[in-house]
Amino acid sequence: ASEPNRVTVGGCIFERGLRPEVFGSVVPAVTVTRWMAGRKKQVIGQAELAPTLLAAHIWAKRLRGRFVVWWLDQDAARQALIKGYSPVYESASIVDEVALKLSWLSCYAWYARVPSPSNPADAASRLDWKTLYNNFPEAVQLRVPGELWHCC
Image (tube, rainbow, N blue to C red; front, side, top):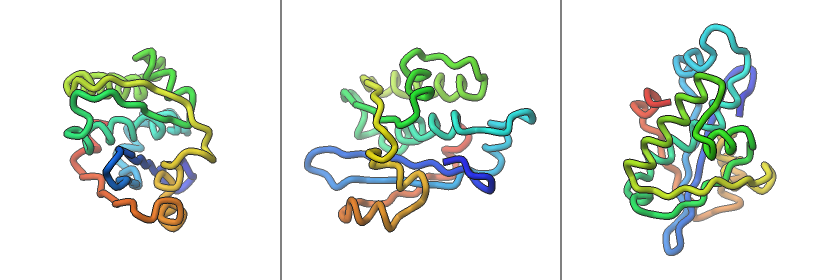
């Protein structure tokens, strides 16, 4: 979510036999500044791509060697990940990092679209924990390690 006073991201993982896990975080100001590169007013593209990269790092052990469906609610971000390209340098950088991380993990990705109202990660991306836990009371909330932001 890209609001006037902050940018937030979130993600979740669902795997049979395990409790859902979620993360949500305010994007550090230094990262938002880098995404803006001194000339942009909107960073929603980067905010939609970053959770894929963060998730690949956070859940690397669970993703290794697996076939994974990644659900995104913004089509531009989904298309960038499918094509492995974005004309926006800051987005392309994140797309490249996702491709490298997933290839290193031997993770076979399929990127699909989910409308925002049906996206289980929407509440996490808005840091709306009350809604998230109403929908998924057994979810485990994870912290985004500060050192991960250097890769976004």
